Image 1 (tube, rainbow, N blue to C red):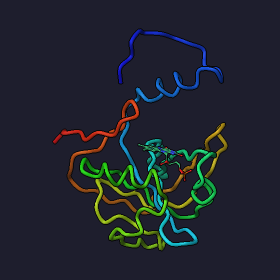
Image 2 (image 1 turned 90 degrees about the vertical axis):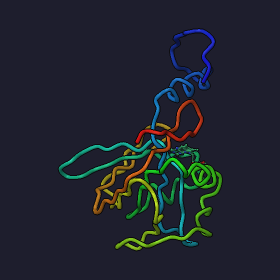
Image 3 (image 1 turned 120 degrees about the vertical axis):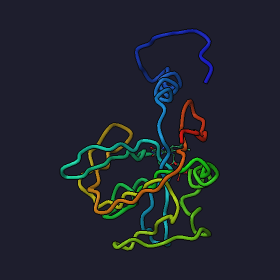
Image 4 (image 1 turned 135 degrees about the horizontal axis):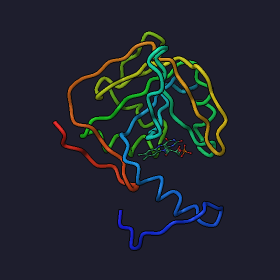
Amino acid sequence: MQIAQPHSFVPDPGNGRALRDAFGLFATGVTIVTTCGPDGCAAITANSFASVSMEPPLVLWSPARSSSRYGLFAGAEHYAIHVLAADQQDLAWRVAKDGAALKGVDLGCNANGVPVLERCLARFDCRRHAVHAAGDHAIVVGEVLHAAMQQGDPLAFFGGRVARVDIN
Ligand SMILES: Cc1cc2nc3c(=O)[nH]c(=O)nc-3n(C[C@H](O)[C@H](O)[C@H](O)COP(=O)(O)O)c2cc1C
């Protein structure tokens, strides 16, 4: 992302764009969260994932209240978080646009009946631990019941862009 001039500001409703841009300078990975919806597999792309605790094993992510998928994901008892690999950029955008985008994709099913992607860098099968209100988002904390991982390069999100990272 190009920043013409270094600048600082006090966040207010008038400069939301600048705040969003500043938040976007924190490079993250990209995840897809899946759960069981009324019509089968529901998914959402999320970069707000973070690991939280080792004992017990906890992770978090933040769904936006404005999302049409908020109720389903904030209320889910079981869900899976997939850390995407470098070549899963298309999938990330497709799921961002459409919560039902995984319906045509080859999916597995975890021990709790959650549809899961067979391929990703890491997967965390979670049970709802807590949901905290946080402004226009919620903080969804999950207990990791099962984890899986494999070798590969990650997908990154920075400045509003998704890009592959060649790290291995
Ligand atoms: C890279 C990337 C990261 C995203 N991260 C989040 C996130 O952490 N939380 C969230 O609620 N939406 C996030 N979104 C947006 C959602 O994937 C989705 O587009 C949004 O909820 C709009 O859904 P709706 O059209 O069903 O309302 C992200 C989108 C992209 C492309």
